[in-house]
Length: 170
Image (spheres, rainbow, N blue to C red):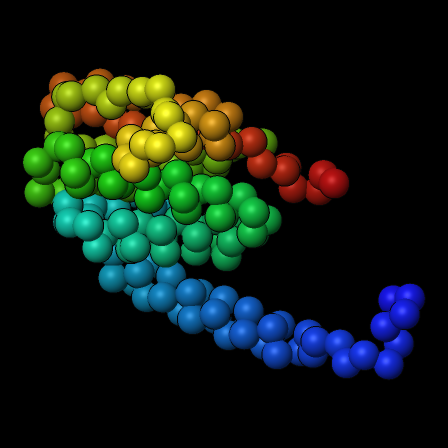
């Protein structure tokens, strides 16, 4: 860096250690969530419809995407944000006692589903800069490649899909 040869530069080692430590904690929490609740990539995982279940759903999503499917961290970050929004809607707006989380992968795509017993459809509303709520589906719409709602005989499944790299592609 021109002109800064004698200046003390920040030590990167501390930041890298902190990042690794946080990732290890998150990884451990994700593994514990898989043990306690099950693997949403194998079968639907049922979680209590409480605000704290959003953290469990995020951990499960991250663990499946990063550890099992070995997809990029950026994919996991986006999916974790979106699953949090769908779970938040299920908890806040349905009055359900439980909701279901399911994840599937096919070549070039992942799909995350949140099922609840309400047949009330979510609404994508216009978002204004000063709005303090109502951005959940807006984020889902902007960050996913596709999303939708499937009505069921008893409830609905709200889902999103994201394109992902296929194994062996660069």
